[in-house]
Image 1 (cartoon, rainbow, N blue to C red):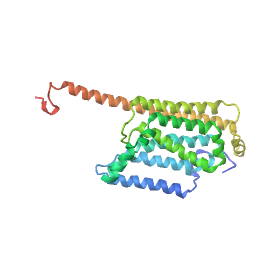
Image 2: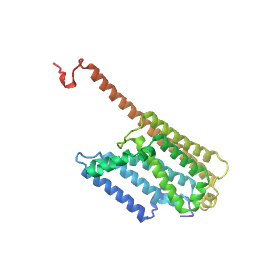
Image 3: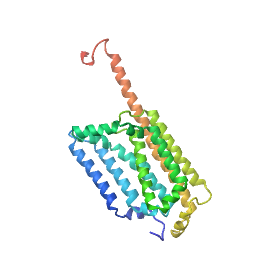
Image 4: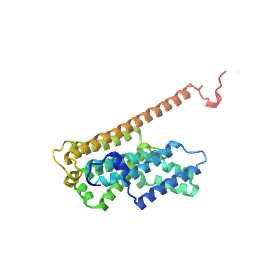
Length: 290
């Protein structure tokens, strides 16, 4: 891949086959589709499309040329992190896989799934404050400490970092998207606070990379030179990716959360108005209009 600076088309056009990862993604997609067929009342097509798009995003991040160029250009490395931490988890969470599993499973497995969702460890991991703290720490440690240099030297550590980003992203966005039935779904304010904390960490990393006057990671000096790219300019681009890319995703989610909260409040208000409009002591079915 060395010799020329990559274009988006080139990165998306160069793929490598990892049988284990490709097989896991294909098996997950197949299980989801089988679950859809078992749901008698049907399943929203948008949920299916979202879940499959999440799996496709993981494939793009780890099997396309993005993964190859991530070792050569910091901007591509940051874009890969964004895909694994922000984009794929949101899409997967919106697909409501736990809800589908509950709907498609017989009574025994359904009880087991419900028990897992109600387990105190799962509830702790999915608490917005805990998840936001973990994701923020992962962003700061992964991009501003010696962990970055270690991931560039050791492929195993790099792959573990990928898994950590994806798992942490799911822990954060499953309760924020709230498509799956959780025992204690967080309120709108808790969701916004968690999202704001993560966005703050991303803005901090973006600012450091954008405004630092020297190349932060020497690893990228030779790699960028081989691609005839300015390592400092690429580092600044990486900061922009973290700053504005994360901001765009965060802004979109914030708008969605606010809109959902407003719609929910409007529905509650309508129920209250219908209730107060009933004669004292009457049930809704006892009122007739002549």
